[in-house]
Image (cartoon, rainbow, N blue to C red):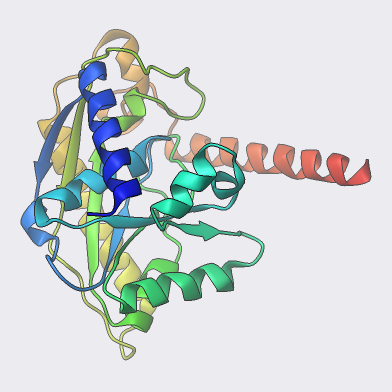
Length: 254
């Protein structure tokens, strides 16, 4: 075990215990004990990467997550992210991040990625970027469909943090590995991955304790919740992107 990573895991488990989080893991046997793999994870909350790594623990594996480079330049999180050998992603220069991930995979690491790229405000799966499949094919490793359900109740977009003792149940599910070669159509494999993760997500939602009252805001509209529909969520994402671009332009102007 690596000293920085193992220390962070120990601290994180302590924090999770204080919060009363209740984890239920299924499909842990699908995580290989050796060799590289891409762990493809849905994205519903800011803490997803801290929870998803738990799915690899029974196999004795560590996950190297791809995360935006701002996290690596932060004075507190930066040294930790580098110490755990996570992979920085510069959205304006993605080729370098892609190469780093492929190299990690070829050296036998599990690399964690979020195919949706951003948090889903609807808590349904968004469209997937093709990089997940291309990365796995380039490295010659399998893809592990992985879903988290419940993390949106801890901290997600447009909602206040709930980092106290909430006792929130969090389900983690890992599906059967998906393999692809250079002969396969990447779009078709991406669709297969999304379908597999949709089945896992719906199963997790079906088995999750019922949400009522104020917690209906964390439930998809499809299931009777008050979360934005996928269409409304996309509109909110677009508005956010426009506002972010305006802030960047204003900052550059100064």
